[in-house]
Image 1: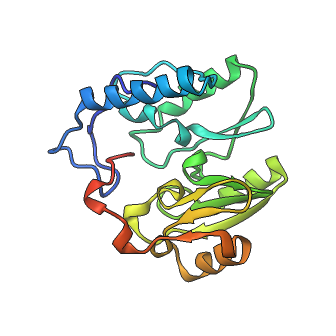
Image 2: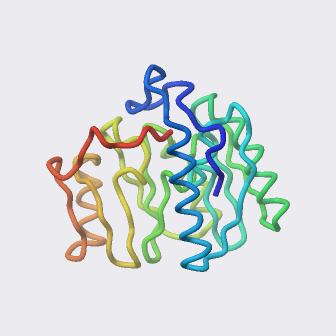
Length: 212
């Protein structure tokens, strides 16, 4: 985790971000501290921290840093220049903490666990707005797991983790309208009866966070 010490809306790289509507940093810090205390004090989870960096407000979204698999850290190639400097700090942290850091070819965008989520033996991987589908081939060579590529079609759901949430090995919550028809068939085929489908009436769009 990364404390949102410097979190704010300093640029616009998704439909939810508006530099004229800055984040409430004090609220963000309060919410983060509350979550951290629940994880560490109530659940007794071990939480590792990375130091936030000035002028990198979105480091707090650590899922986007890369993909972890069996001691390997596949570092993200961020699409937007505003976030690209984050990669160096995350790579240094994982290398220092004993992980093998792997970099994909720099011409292939890949935004880590923001666009790649395991469910059972499958890695569901979103692409289009942030990650490049060509990066999936390189990830597959590293992890040796089946990768199920799914196209995102709504820019409001630019990362897979904004519209797809695995729960255990055979259950997901997902928003069908965020995906093309093929991806919807894929989800149905692999998850099927235990999935929960959300339609647009269930999504309070005005409450969506201004995440990066």
